[in-house]
Image (cartoon, rainbow, N blue to C red; front, side, top):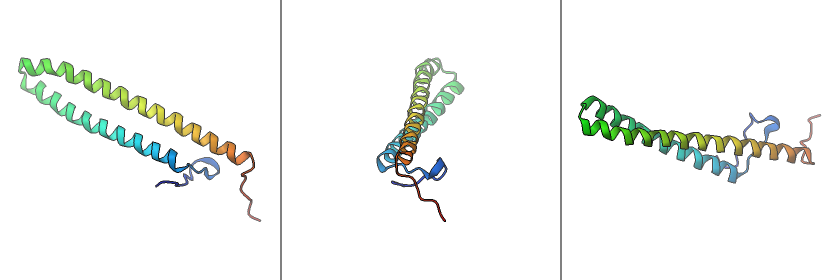
Length: 105
């Protein structure tokens, strides 16, 4: 996927390998957090169903961890959005500064 052209970005803007690598790294981080959240949610549900006071108390910490993970995912997506916009803008500027594509005859 490195060096791919994302044709959906006006003018067929190309994203360099470093940008794509950054996106991939962020998506892996998001997926890892979401996987962890799935485990947390399963444990929270089991604790809730058990109705054991210690398990219910443990849920307080688990829910806090889940909320923090959700904040991390939001931050990662926000950063991805900003990076994506900047890379598209930079690519568009490069096209308008003299790297214009020739028009077919």
